[in-house]
Image (cartoon, rainbow, N blue to C red; front, side, top):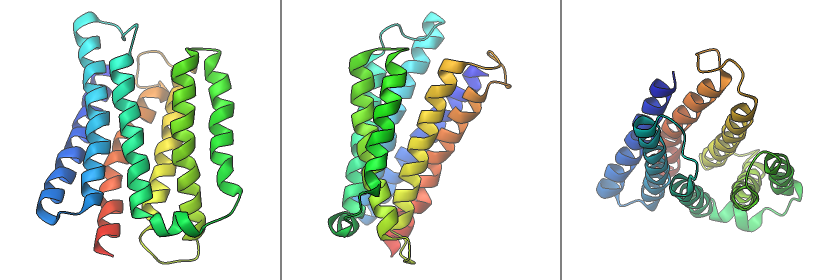
Length: 206
């Protein structure tokens, strides 16, 4: 099950990155380039992780290579949000978006009881930033028919699935079988990358 799930995610992120890159070359829209960088960075993190498991039969004891790629991916997602929703992020002043960083800080404390401190703090900071900007955008567009809201919604969905995936990796219910929710969360994360394509298309065509 793990091999299938890893292969599916590599194909999904790689396909999303390649498609977005080709769209950028044909349209010269920066949104497509940022999506390509977001997906591509995640793809290389997954690729290293999967190859390590394939050759050594276990997850990396030190995963700084994959972590660095995934952190870069989060940064590109932040840039994508900021670029596509610059107007919304300038005007929205609600305090509700701070729930995002508060949530990630609480989860950081929980995860630090199971892992490294520094990596969890970096993750919390990046994911908190994504959620903060995403919630601001959703609030701004809540009564609007603008297609700009879909990028913010997808970013929130991405964060939710990531956290669900990390929680399932700790609980590890069902072992290395299809009954383990971890694998299905990973598949949902892969599908999330594919879902970013129509979200960006809506923004570009608006």
